[in-house]
Amino acid sequence: MNRSEKSSKIRKICVYCGSGTGTDPAFVESARAFGAVLAKNGIGLVFGGGSVGMMGTVSKSVLDHGGEVTGIIPEFLVVREHAMRGADNLIVTRDMHERKRKMFELADAFVAMPGGVGTLEEIVEQITWVQLGRHRKPILLANIKGFWDPLCALIDHMKGLEFIRGDLNFDLLVADRVADILPMLQKAAATVSEEEKEMSAVAADRL
Image (cartoon, rainbow, N blue to C red):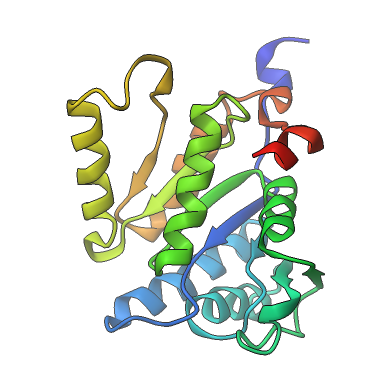
């Protein structure tokens, strides 16, 4: 079997985003638009399980367009983030660590939409796992209205000072438009084998 036959397909995408909506209506609209894209392309959504903010918008959009949604939420956030009961599959975990591990296991790619510190922490953790060689699943910043420009500038700064260098370098996709997100992820996934996507449960527990 050659590499093209073994290359991975994107079946589910994990979307990290805020439990708030932010001040710019473009953020919510981008979440709504991307939810529709996922559903129309038969790609399942894996998300944080809340029904509020950006999380609620993207998941409701997927469901409204006939798509598949899996919400993963830790027990202590079920009330605070109003866990979405309309999801096809709502998984309640013991803690944040188990939540993030389940999100990783179920997703073939990761997208960070506008959000707060939690969104930043989640996407940076995935970047770190790629740096450490734990997996090669595509990671993309949905740079709506330049939201992620400061993070991109910081990463460039780290590269310039050689804190990110050599085997610590990583591929990070950046899309300014919702329409570009899925094509960019699919192109990146085509270069990754199923084996390169995997991280053992033991490795995940150690991170």
